[in-house]
Length: 94
Image (cartoon, rainbow, N blue to C red; front, side, top):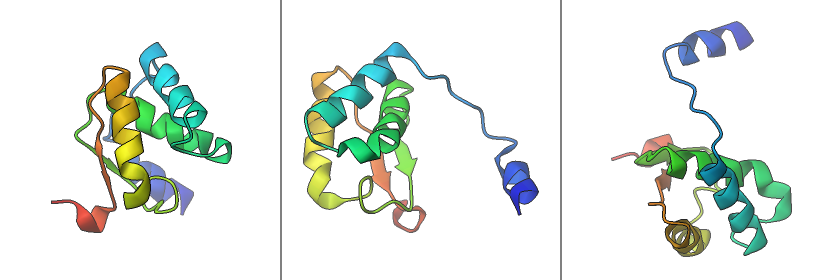
């Protein structure tokens, strides 16, 4: 199973962790957009925003694809000078 997952991902470029992504992730947690236990999720948002991703696809509806958290996440991204990605499940992708 792991080999199959790695094969599927083989054509997708790896984007680096930047200072901008780290700063945003820390702000998302500090300002309460995501709880501290979801710091890894905050980094997913930070990396996506820092690399100008239009979408962040996830099955994580608790902390990421969550409509009640969306406006706070967007506001914090913008306060850091970044456009927030559209966070949705693959099923919701337009």
